[in-house]
Every structure is written in structure tokens, then in C-alpha cells.
Image (cartoon, rainbow, N blue to C red):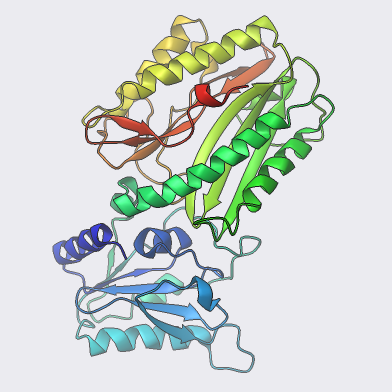
Length: 387
């Protein structure tokens, strides 16, 4: 566990008077331990006194377990064994009692809204009914809700280093997207090439898990990109725009990037729209620094789009936190958001213009780190990668 996160957790436990935190959702384990579980049913007990303990199912691969932490197994997936969940509850209760923390409240988040997938992303292992109710009874002191949002919104230096690896692989995916913009290829084929480029990064320096979800829309299909993204069997035609919405997870750390490309010379209206979106994004990013209200950044982009006559065609917020999930919780860059930018925040900046009446759509999205005195773009900036 990195020291910055440890200090944050220790301070929160003392402030709230809790005996321990309990984390089990994949993104919670990434932000606390840098550990992305395989089955998605590992539980981290983080006590105010003594070392943390990680409870993992017996089927969890040993080579992905974090170093420097006590690991206890419970018999999930073992045929004819004891009830794994009762064993887990007993194990957690036992550690709390030995540490003398069982009379203090246990703190965790009952409802997190959504969570990132585990490594076994095709189907996360089911959790037992009433899990949170059972966990809330493990301490005599009861239960206190964890302030999850504060853990997500500001990244530590170690988080940022991990996200730099994610964005290095994302660059490979984006370059693959541009290389595959050939008339006759289907949207699905381009998306498959993008996802394959990410998967093939597994085993390269610093990458032991790599997945991507590439969604490609071309021509008239880009008009719907403000409402949804999907790849279809439509073949790319000459002289049309193509949009890539890319979510990518490397070792449990996420990036969210959108690019626009073309299969030849674009119709004038579509080229104009791409240029306006790029100008709006640049205006917003150049305004990012600590202490600036998020609604101000959103307005900088929106003002450019309104001035060009397309204000009604930009119907979503400018950006959101990203890193531990595809969409991290917390206030984002949108109208009325008065939260202030802080160093360590990483936000997407993604203006767009779309519409059936203009028969096209465009969005450009980069991931921007707020620094002590300004910003740093983690993704390869759009203008550096267009072809």
C-alpha cells in the first residue's frame, strides 16, 4: 500500500472513530492496494491498529496477490467444504477481536452505485444475499458508512505512475484505430483491431492485465454518438468521419479516450464541426488549474460551441473523474458544478457536437491531470495523433 493512501485512510479512521475499514469491490482494492482481483470476491480489512489483512478465495491466483500484506484464504469454490461466507465472516470477526477493535464501528460502503469489473470480467462471482447486513453485525460498535468519494477524486503519485502505463497502452490503441480507417472495413472490424492491440500489450513492461472496449461509429452513425456508442456491421465508406470511444483498463487502472478520424476528405460541415470541437477542448484544458470551479471549465468549452451556432448540439457534461473506473464518482465538469479543481484530480475533457439534422457527430476526449500549478495531459493529445 502506498504511503499517501495509508495516511489518508489512517486519518479517516481516526476522524470517524471507526475500528477498521472493509473494502471488497475491485476498484476499491485497486485504490487501496493496487490489486485487481481475479474473481472479484477478495476482502481487505484495514484496521486502525496493526497491519491490514486480505481475505481471498482459495481459487485466487497467487501470482497476482499484492506483496507485503497478510493473506488469509476462505474456502469459496471448494466442493464439500464449509460455508465459505460463514468462514469469511468468522475470519474478519476473529482479526477484529484479536486486535481489540471489535467494540468499535466497522466502516464500509453499502451502496457504491456501480463498480469496475474484476479480471474475470465475463462473469464476476456472485456475492451472498444480505452481505452488507451480515458485515454490519461483525462489530459490537455497529457500522459507519465510508466516505468513498474522497478516496476516488484525488490520485496519489503511485496512482498517477500506474495511470501513465495505462495511457501508454492507450496510445497503441489509438494509433491502431487510425491505421485501420480504410473504406470497406466494418466498424466492428476496426473495433476488434483496437481491442486486440490492447490485449497484445499483456506481458509487456509493466502490464500484466490489459482489456479494452472499443466502440466505433462511422458516417451517419456518428450522429448518435452523444446518446450512445456502439459498433455495428456497417462498412466504412470513403470520405466520412469515424469516431472511437475507448475505455481501457491496465492492471486495474482506467483511461477514457475519444478520437475522431476520417476515411478521406470530410464533407465541409463535418470538418468544421471537428475543428470547433477541438477548439472547445483546447479552451477548456488551458483553463484548468487548482482552485477553478468545475462549472467554469465546462462553460469555456460550451461558449466556443455556442458561438459557432451549435450550442443545442452539445447536450452532455464536459467531463468526469477517471482512473479507478471508467467513470469515477465525484463532481464533474458540468453546468452548475461548483466543486473546485484540486491537484491530483484526473478528469476527462470531452466536448462534442452531434445531430441527425447535421448528419454527423464528433467528440474529442483526453484525460487531464490537475497539477500544483496547472495541468498535464496524460493521454497523447488529440492534435498530436490525428492523421
